[in-house]
Image 1 (cartoon, protein in one colour):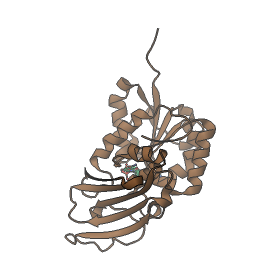
Image 2 (cartoon, protein in one colour):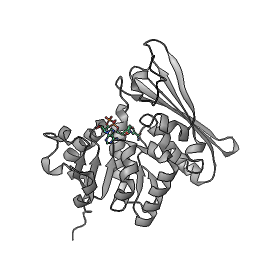
Image 3 (cartoon, rainbow, N blue to C red):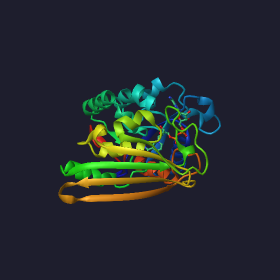
Image 4 (cartoon, rainbow, N blue to C red):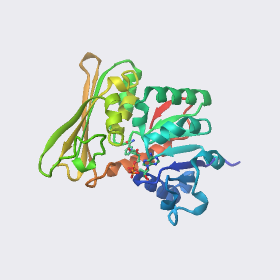
Length: 278
Ligand SMILES: NC(=O)c1ccc[n+]([C@@H]2O[C@H](COP(=O)([O-])OP(=O)(O)OC[C@H]3O[C@@H](n4cnc5c(N)ncnc54)[C@H](O)[C@@H]3O)[C@@H](O)[C@H]2O)c1
């Protein structure tokens, strides 16, 4: 009797830093772990030539269903979550690499409806968030009162809407760029606050409007990003974590986040029609 579980076919949408990392790992380590690369899509498919086997390059994302994947991983931009998320969920599980997209209440509801209807899972990778599952447990137990996330990075690591950082200079030190709800922060810095978005998913009862965040520019942070999470529960319970995530100068994504995404992908085997922090 064959007791091995069937392979999981994975489609990768986006071939930037994270996409390249995941594709390389899928080609190298996937088969031994029951993962098979089903396709890779990038908005400019020329970037894939010579790097990805030709038969795995998907030219037109609208034809993703022909590749019969079990899970699709988005690692490019919140816009693709907006345009394709519901379609993906009608066919397979969906790992949302840009969860800042979920701060859009209307989109969030549509995706959740599609997930419930299809019985397929919306996976949100915890990325650089430490303790996400603990926050979720506190939330599910009704004891979560407040969550605050501060992300501090070198100014070269920010991709912000507007020109708030246009005039930064080396050596200037710390500058608080924005403080407010994660719902407000996501549209301002969609590429930089995915960790906060993951915290807002974990803290479902507080929602994106209830979880607070702050982004700080700090010219001293040349080699790493800092993510601080403050969680408050009932009866005086509180936790404060500080994570130093090594990161190259100018990098949006910290180095440890790559491995974290890979670990998240290994979990995406189907958890029913719901949002699952992994
Ligand atoms: N969840 C997390 O913790 C976490 C951590 C890091 C990055 N991210 C997010 O994951 C995504 C990928 O990160 P990365 O480090 O690989 O970024 P990257 O900039 O290296 O790559 C992004 C890729 O997407 C493409 N792209 C950009 N805008 C697009 C659009 N509108 N439509 C289609 N393609 C587009 C780019 O050409 C590039 O190939 C980003 O949205 C980033 O914010 C999430």
